[in-house]
Image (cartoon, one colour):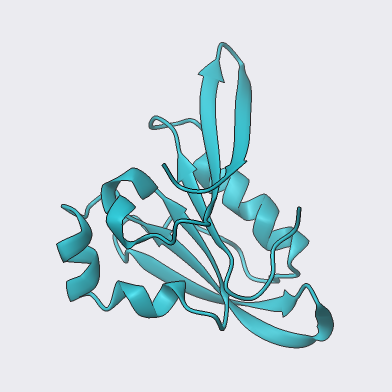
Length: 127
């Protein structure tokens, strides 16, 4: 399974589980050169990534943090749906806060803290 234009990765897990670290790994794999930081206060950060299907082409990489949002209505009022379109790849932290806005075929990564380790379950579809 791999990411392509239009892919949405929905991250779920408690505070400190490593959602931003996981996002950094995805970004690195997509050739994002900039430092990825948590967009908690900005909600959305945009970076330039390499298109996985055509590495010579650039596509947007959207890092979305829904922690401060009070649901789908807040996300919509920010124009959030435009970040989930076909032109880029989006990774959404605290995705359960905007569950109704996410596509049903989103890739879901649930991160569980198990002592010093992390257990990551990846599935297709956002429940």
